[in-house]
Length: 249
Ligand code: IPE
Ligand code: IPE
Ligand code: MG
Image 1 (cartoon, helix red, strand yellow):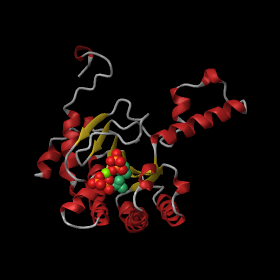
Image 2: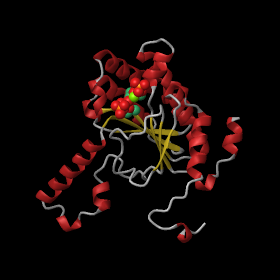
Image 3: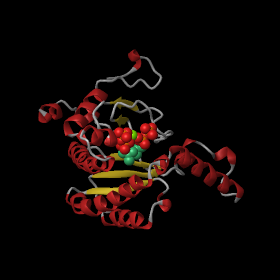
Image 4: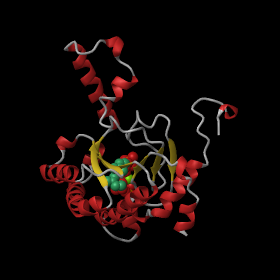
């Protein structure tokens, strides 16, 4: 079944970068009469499957939204559990990432994470830095508005110190200041759990992304669901402002 779907994917039209808003852990846990944390724990399996499937296909970048700046407003116990899970998961997955030649990176305000989480994350990044098959980017304590403000401040500072003139500001100079600098924009953004919003994720970078929403709750997301999203993406016509007849096929 999953293999049949995989066979339908056109390798030449594969998105280079897929971003995922992993949502629905809490509802999945509730459905099973369990505490929310149970949902987060089971979400790790979906992370593993999605990462593996993307790498096998030849996707170059996979960005997973794991914790937003707004998520600090959740009950303290849930936040703590998420931070612990982050440490455990990174520590537990590094050897698999290395085996699969996957490099780990992070975007977001990492300095504000608990020191244990930062440590595990930085170690994971360091230990996988020479891997070349795919880059797995974890968005942690991430907020797109925060990221854009950071870029604005950095550019303002470069002007103040006369390293840059305002006429020199363009999309490229701006993008250089984003935490995704050097990473191509995602062509496909997937959100699970049936919510159809962007929740402060990669606002600049998804300017022309195809959005794919699925009712599947994150802990149930498997390779076949990623394949379905990619097939859907490949059947869309990306016009970038042009009309259908102008596009060369
Ligand atoms: C996504 O699942 C995980 C995080 C935001 C960390 P949720 O925890 O948001 O699950 P729901 O949306 O409450 O079901
Ligand atoms: C978005 O999910 C953030 C992550 C997936 C980490 P949320 O569940 O926090 O989003 P909202 O609050 O429902 O928009
Ligand atoms: Mg949610």
